[in-house]
Image (cartoon, rainbow, N blue to C red; front, side, top):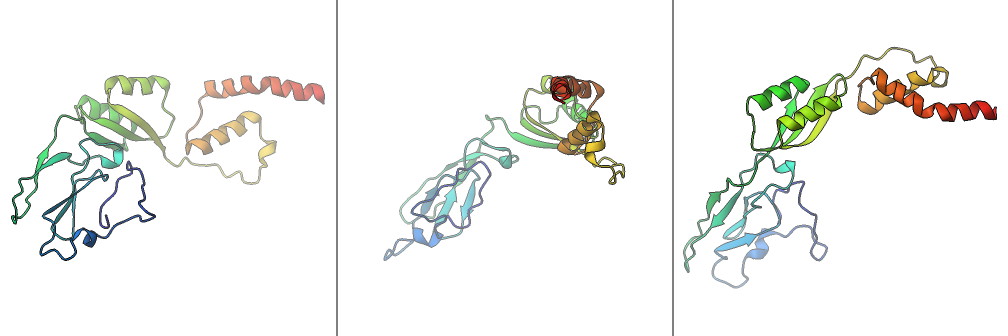
Length: 215
């Protein structure tokens, strides 16, 4: 319905090619009064839409994506009588696990501190943390063991200082340096450790030998 606020988790739908319906369509033509209450579905956010009578989305009882983080979920109760005004009563729900988004500019250490403090202990978490180096597998495992509700871990890398070597052609660089630059670009500034570079060199070694033999 026109005026309803959507969330990222709703499936886009169309009815007869129309994306929205004007709330005025819910008024009964020729009737002496508008409907007392119009109950709407599909949108997950509980909300009222301006129009004839009382028009509301009750919202979903659970959050379905992190775009709904922070929303209070509820059910709606109504006692209706002919000619009386509809007064919806919201009953808030507490049994489901809430969703929370963390943006830890202090990196891994800040996330661990928040977990130790008991922050959002019951929630499902979408965690973004600012880093200068890639997380190790050990750090990722420690985060997930420390809080069972972590769903996403999103590294955000700071802009690394780049050396001014624009004059050097990429093809003239050693292959390990080419890999380091590629990794840095793909990860937004993170630096690969020596073990990862060594693993890459081992993987491409057979290909390099084949090229030498064919030459």
